[in-house]
Image 1: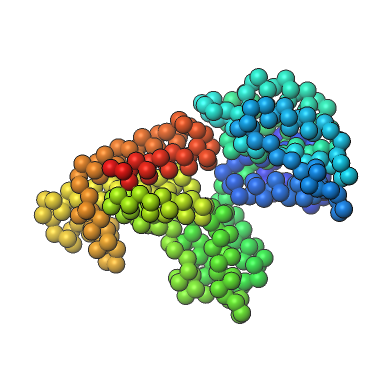
Image 2: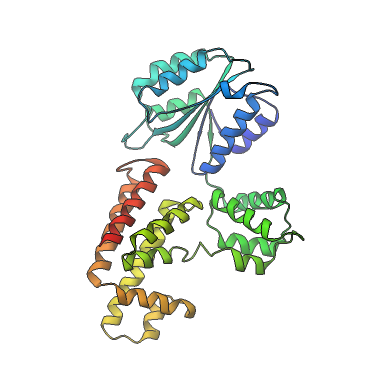
Length: 347
């Protein structure tokens, strides 16, 4: 059975704890928060949690068997055991899967008679719904899909988080805030915490505060990264990449922005080499006045061959992420874009 996050929230409000969960989906921050909430509710006051809350990574050989074995053990001075199984991957291609059909007999045996004293939480980085084991886990457990928030849900989540942070924000200012932040919960939460702290003591979030503190990550937040790459500043490029990803930037969306900037640089470089007037270059590259000088300086520093090669490498990385070559799920995508940044900075 597959639940939405709202379905799960309703069940947890009623303290209905299932014996086995599978949590998956793009909103990994909400997924991880749900795993923590389920774990917290599984224990009673006074339980010895340290003895009974265990995590197993499926990147370690034999970890699934160990996790199922731990779930069969009686809790030690607690009402339940909580077994978290991390790094679960059932990909579209099968590359680097950590649960395979070879695991089905052991899983089937446990799920047919789960321990009443344990809660197992499978935390999936990828759970393909077409592959056999993806279907199996969705059908045989309480599976919860943490799909990406749509614009309405994103706004509702932001309102609730501002309220939790003790800050006040009106609707026009909220719309300004949302227009500047990538649609990812982790980045959103970081920015809300920053604004709430800066709004003390009156707690009012203003447009001026947002202009001062919240970078416009939906537009060209990664141009510093592109500039470092063009200039060959590998250490700064990697540091910039890490910050963007740690702030909740999605690898594929970031790759799209890098591709967009490199293609604009390539067009600008070609036009500049042909003697096209600066105003025309800025118009074709869609540059605002304040962005023209740093952008065109980057174009002047780069060679046509380097920019052309970069566009080709970016396209190859896009294909690798979409086909799970070299790793699936968020971690695989992050690894691919980190490799790309290293390659671009070295050339």
